[in-house]
Image 1 (cartoon, one colour):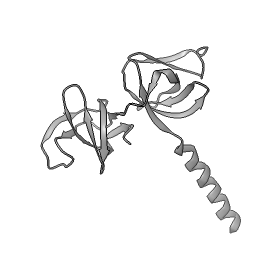
Image 2: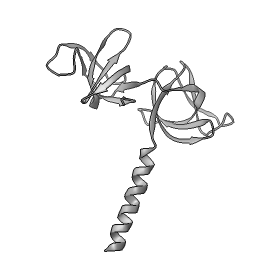
Image 3: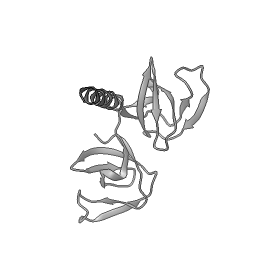
Length: 148
């Protein structure tokens, strides 16, 4: 019994440490290369063309970061192309943007999946967001990106 409990605790410790080191960064520029490996010698997998797109950093090697986007594309990006600016992507169609952090406040807009929003702050399961046209509140569960 002791061996089973010990094995379980070791697996739990390793599992939580693997995912505890992941964090979000955003794209610093309008055009960023996602590479197959952690150097400029590796081929480009795809181009990102959206400034402030949030990426989940999963690993590090020298000046490159292994990242995953909201569509599960993975690859390597040079650290100079990343920023700590807070941003998120709407992940649910027909997500409402409200005037305050309650569903009983005035709905300002309806946002579709894939919409990029800058995050001003998050509190109590809501995030204050902005884009070029609107500032309001969105439920945290509808967002993918840096919300803390």
